[in-house]
Image (cartoon, rainbow, N blue to C red; front, side, top):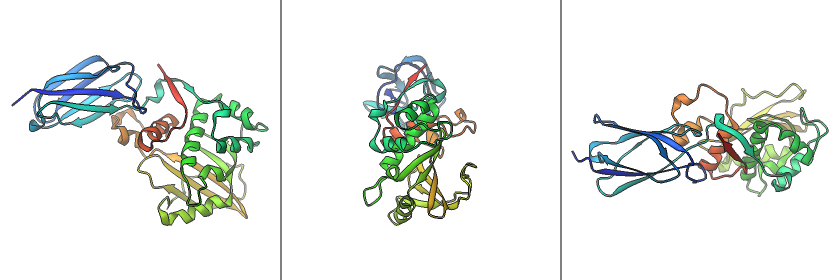
Length: 296
């Protein structure tokens, strides 16, 4: 059995930049009794490991644990000749975020500025609009991150006539970390229904989505979800006469585990975190919510 395999690792964040911290790496062969452990490796540089068994003998399971990112585990085969080069992407661990960098109001998309300017009755921020509302929401990083995620995804979700989803949102009424409730143009529901034939949206159950009590008299009017494997945009509509409101959220659908192969036991039934959604949007959908993290 030849033990002459060579591995070169590049460990990066969702933007493709190398991690700027030391990591622990373990390699366990899936067929042979062979394990390697490397403590405190500098991830800002390429990491090279030699004397490995090659793919002829089967794959290794590699586990890498950075301080500020999620623990990722993958299976890999080492080539019989030359050097096996492997880039591994790590999502930020939300619990290690100590600050978030958001753009100024003037740097927002025109759709996001318009919605904030038209929203004078947001729960907890009544009588504030535009930049004043934006600054007030910004006291809570979680809420503002959630708003940026949904703004990014709705702006990128475009109907056949060229209108994007956010442009048909009239007024925000309540903002949470994982969703917002808004008054929407009835055209948004019509466009969503029309998009079923193209596969942009598909109809799903909205039974778990409930309106806050401030919306009196509104009845369910169907729920729809984009056809993404992870990070789906979901629009759940409610109607009262000619008025429409929507519960708009992005569904994690365990994406942080599947997209990045994050070790499953890092999650214990916690609700969808907007920082996880940020990482899925950037890495999996190549969308940029336009905010970044400061890590411990």
